Image 1 (cartoon, rainbow, N blue to C red):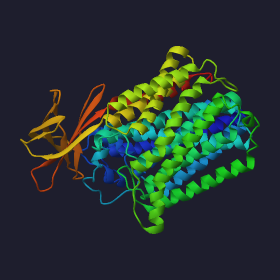
Image 2 (cartoon, helix red, strand yellow; image 1 turned 180 degrees about the horizontal axis):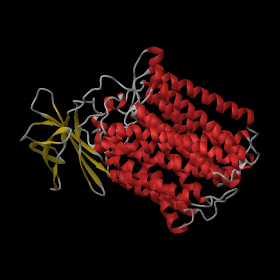
Image 3 (cartoon, rainbow, N blue to C red; image 1 turned 60 degrees about the vertical axis):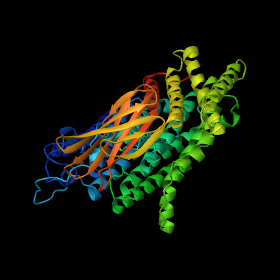
Image 4 (tube, rainbow, N blue to C red; image 1 turned 120 degrees about the vertical axis):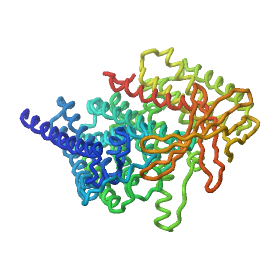
Length: 595
């Protein structure tokens, strides 16, 4: 058996090694501007900075799929390397299911998306990379996001292997938990990087816009977060076995659905890579094969759920986990419907519609309130059975949260009822998580940090929404805009030549009602290849507020369209997501399960 182990490990290593060689070959082609390569010709240019030549390797459909394949082969190699103590049959079956995915992507790459197609005669210059993709955050966003996406493939393969061998147990949960955490951490950070990029690069002035491709990354995150909590319950009490399997399948399926939607061309988004129905059809067929395989394995091999679930006490940590999982699945369904409904409507009726923030806000916010309350109460309960004795502090914190919220809302001209309830729930979670730091100290530190980060995220988003202000106006050089809150002087414009673009830099003097003075310098960038004009925001950040300004030229006029925004607590939105990820990182290195 040791010889078999060595052969399997050698196979996966050489598989990974050869994909690495291919990937490095594509990187080299981009670095040296080898325009005989069709992928390089379509997505690079000699004047591009070296950093963006390298990142251009995965800033396109073909290169990004090769990166997918690279991470797939890396993860199965690491999985086999780190699971030598597991059953032989389990490791071999996990490898089998993972190889089905790898072979599917390999065939897809060769048949429809070969990154090594050559063209003759060799062009002297390339077409260049989309300027909005030439950004440091977006350069590292895809690899980090793919580590999260592809990490779910190992969970998927492992779950199917464990079901086939009737190995869904505490031991399996303890083993696979590390892979759930590493996938969740990378997916969280990948979404964060994409959000930061959209904030300052697209000039929208916000962190989330319910763009279809944003939703595509959020859906597997919701499923993976639910799975993470179920794995902890399975490790502790050997419950939610079937739920864990379903979530493992769902998470990877949603990652594959994201690949299909982004690469089929049926989504209209700034994030989409390709517009090729043949590619989308291939992924769709492959996705159906994987779904059919997973359901066959689940229904054929899965044993009946043990009876512990029936005897769950209503006042217990596992019940709180189960209830919050229902909420998470509801949020997932809302996002899924809002994303795919316009697609189905267009196919059936040829009518094009877009589902925007109002749809998601109306359906999510009412259920977010009890979700936050249960999230605050759940960690205060014990496993198996708890009681409400010595829990009066929950009522006290809820009362303090309500009073504080009323004071804030009363002084603002905003919707009293909705904002009062939502802010109360957010403050309640925030105060409870802060209390846990002082009360529990280093006990459940990872959980405390992650939950505190989430409470901070919700509060930051709410305050950002409530206190934000915006001015949109047209100005020409020398003119001044005056409002009750701001005075904007358009002083001058300057020009600057960079390696692959020319910049027109505006100079604006901002004076607020308190007499505070600042200079803002948004840019218009005119890229040489491709010949595209982009708007670059100027953002002044401090601990409490972002000042955000963009400028755009008004066609055939000497005026510029100016957009100036005050965005409170933007920095804390980013910090809170980092805290959430850090909590997961601590749990990843933690040797025992959560209490």
